[in-house]
Structure formats: C-alpha cells, structure tokens
Length: 533
Image 1 (cartoon, rainbow, N blue to C red):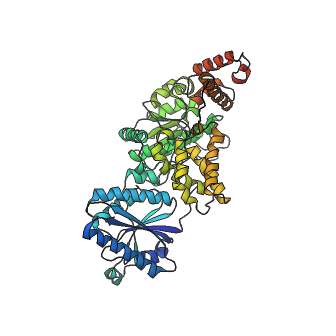
Image 2 (cartoon, rainbow, N blue to C red):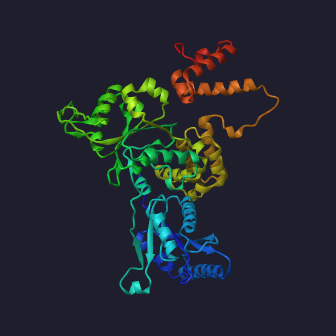
C-alpha cells in the first residue's frame, strides 16, 4: 500500500549568523505553494561553541526565533533547536556529517511520515555540501526535499522565493530505497532496514557479506526465521549489484507458496506460455524469467516449488534456456537468482530440494540475523514499522508519532525475544494504534501492545521471577514440555515440522518427548506424539 502524500512538512535549517531569520521566513511562508505542504515544525541547528564565536551563534539563534514568532504570528510553527556542541570549525566536513546524520535520523524518528524539507541556503559551504550529500544519496528514509531561498538579487532577476533543488546521485542507498520486489508481505516490503543507520554487528556483518558477493552473478540463498527481513536483504543485494535494470519500479519476485498445489501455475508464471497452449490460455504470456533478463529474480520460500519445476529451473539458471509452454522458440534470458526460506539447510538438502538444484543454489548460503541479535537497530526499525502500520490500518490517531520514540515501549520491545521478528513489531503497532484511537492513556496503550506479544508466544522471559528452594529439573522439564506442546500444535501433530519450528533435530525432539512421557507413566504419548512418529 502506498503512503499518501504528506500535507505537513518539517523544515530543517542551520541558523544564519549574518542574516538571522531572513532566509527562513520565505521558506516557511511559501513552502505551501512550492510543495503543497504546510510547515508545522522548524528545527534550527547552530554551533554551540565557546568564546566570541559562540556568542554570535547564540545571538543569531535567539534573534531568529524572536523574529519568526513576531513575523509569523499567530501561525508560527513549533520551533525546536538542535545545538551542535563542538570545538570543530564550521568547515570540517567530517564533524558536520556526524552531527547532521544524528540530527536527521532523530528527526525522522520523531516524524516518521512527514515530509522533511532541508534548507540549503543558511550555513557554510561545508554545511551545504553535507546536507546535499545526505539528502540526495538515499541516506534518509521517507519523503525528503531540498530547497533554497532567493536573496534580493535572485528575486530581482525573476527567481521564485523558494526553489526546489532536484539533485540526485545514483547510489546503492538510493536504488535500494526506490526499488521494491514485485510481491511483498506486509511485514517485509523490501525496505524494513534503514541501511544508512545500521549499528548492530550482526547486521553489519551480513551487509558486508552481501557487498562482497554482489558483483558475482551467482545464486544467493538466504536462510532465516520468519519475519527477519529476507526480502529486504534480497532488495539490498540487488541494489548493490550490476544485475538490475535501471528503473525505479518493482522487480521480479516469485512467491513460491502459490505453487504448492498447482505446479502447472509455476511453469506458466516462470516460463510463460503461447496463446492456446492450454485451456484458458487466451493470449501469450511472458514469463517472469524472461522479464528478469538483465536483472535479479527473487524466489521467496523456494522450498515450496515442486521438483519437476526445479529441474527446469536448472537449465534456465545455467543459460541453456527454456521453451515457454506451447512455444517452440528457445528463450535464453540472463539473470541472477536470489532465494529465501525459513527452512533449515538440512531440510533443504534432504527433504525439499532436488540435489542438483540444491547444489546450484547453495554456493553462498547466508543466515539472516533475527531481531534479537540486532537490538541496536530495533529503535529505527520500530519507527518504520509503526509508520507503515498507520498506512496499512488506514488510521493515524492524534499523537501516534510520539510512540515511535517512546522509551518505555522501546525498552520492552528490545528486551523481548521477538520470535516473529518484524511480524511481532507489526502486531505491537496494530494493537498500539487501536488503543491510541480509543483514547487510552499512554501507559495502557503501551501495556496492551506489549501484552499482544505475550498472548501470542506464551511465556515472557522478561517476567521471570525465581523462587527458592526450587526443583530445577522439574521446572526445566515443564518449560520444555510447554514449548514442545506448542510446537506440536503449530505443526498439527507432525514431529518433523515441530522440530523445525523449534530449530532442533527431529531425533532430539523424539528423545526428549519419550523421556518426558516415560517419566509421566506414558500417559501423554497420544497427546504429544503421533503413533507413527
């Protein structure tokens, strides 16, 4: 679902030491006409240094605020200041960049869906260059615009008071932010991570591996728990690689689950068909593989494709080509394959994939880290999920943005194991929006949202309160039994599926369950283990 165009804007600017509010007033007054968005908040950045230089900076800030309130009353936007406490000179690009990155990411967290307008006119040339670079390379997610205001000379020459600066650089971040896989899930639209703000070692290592392998046109197999953002990493790999068509639109994605009960559909979707190839084929269809010529194609849950189709894919991947259904013409597209699954490598090798197909896919196998291994990145991810949830739910209750940076909520989310990963964040967001819209207090809204995780996944490790003396073996056995029971229910009595959900070998699960059953006199065997297990 596409987010609606922002009707309100956030203006970000350095304070002009020489001109004070002069460049800001036309920006605020005329932005509605230039961008169709009203400025509701202004962030003013200035250098907080000692000595005479610092006095001039603070005086300029104070006079700027005073003039804005006087000139723009009664509709002056909210003014928030962001002092740069530093001893660096105002021409030090690297130090300016560090401050600017922190400020922009913080503002985006506070305003997840608003249009951020960066004003280039005030400040030193080094400050202009940093704003321009960060805004034009894709560092900052969400809607962003660059503007500059005209001085008197520019106005006299016929320039408008506010000019939109259309300056874009072709970078990995920009390509990543503009492209999306053709089919996506609600919890992973291909952009759940802000690549410009990654902090955790686990995610940094994963991205570094992708960078190393991006130039090679070989298959990549992404493994990971459900909801870890595998589609996003596939999108990232494509953005880093030369195997992409230069276009800002959706790229070929195959949701393999749709083919579980209809292998014929898989052949038609992937390889295409001629008109009249089968009943209902009223016109020619170009397959996804042919559309992916010169690009990357992503197979989501590759284990769901039947083995006959897998063997046909081998020839296509190796460049030997294929015939669309009912068409004698041989088609030989060139593409890169990226696959994802939440199955284990052992399951893929032994149960799901044809051995020859597996060998060709498993050249690079990359495990996507779960959210609990990327806790430093959860605050930024949460802000994105919450903003997207307002679009999916078609609901933006007053004050919802505050919860993007709510410290207590973030602390509880970060401490939770989040077995559903981004799907858990999405669940929290929906429950939170419902409570805010119903007029609940912040405390009730947060507690209700976090309880959605506990209700879904049972025990909350954060509520662990030991009591002594304790029968440790008995407590451990009970904890294990409850997880085994839950996994068997989820797997509908299939012990292999239950073992997969728990991430343990099938024989290990059978051993523990048999041991538990024996200790209880065999009374629970029918409930926990099918007779043929």
